[in-house]
Image (tube, rainbow, N blue to C red):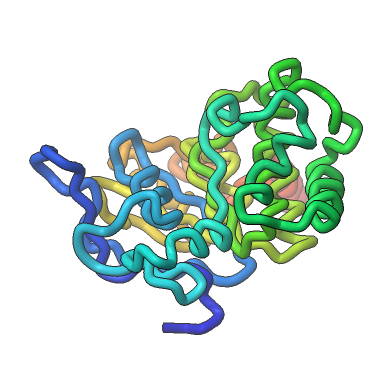
Length: 281
């Protein structure tokens, strides 16, 4: 086991009670320190189950998961594990518990006995990190969906975790809310070195990750950088997934005989390719 890995998943299977089949089986995965890992998969592929296992909400039926070197099977370590691996869920309303934003951010710290003076510093830092300091006295229920999710992230951030696991945390947001949450998380990864596990079904979000894994029927079907995974258009379609629009366009152009790069991910890259091809004509 590499000591620099924040999460190590080894031979993990998980079966829900009374379920006929395993939700996960034979999963091996290492999440490296400071990386942004995106986990993709159609509904029922096992990606959310994997997220909950990483946070010790579930315990593997078989195999082991180590979070910052701690085995999630050890009940005595669960409290510590959840401080090192914070979880942000799909619906922020299920994670906000107080009537004032700053009190909500402080809630988790109160539960672990952080001294009040230190708590104040951490609340201020967490709200600044997600650009919500101007809303510290606001009522959470009055915020937009994206703002609520940023407050939820601040509450996790105040616990000073090594890893933040976000389980489809933009699924209920409009495009503007999705962008602001993703931008916030990417900035935290770059500036604070926090390891991010981003569970999503949005291809444009996964395209911004350092590494992508694709789940299918409880197993890892594909793994690699976005430029390695997304050009496999036919395979992704077999797995009932879309691809980033510009990657799909590149694939269709190549099929029509236009020699564009297969690993185009963004509009900007497609423009560069069109300009490159135009200059040769």
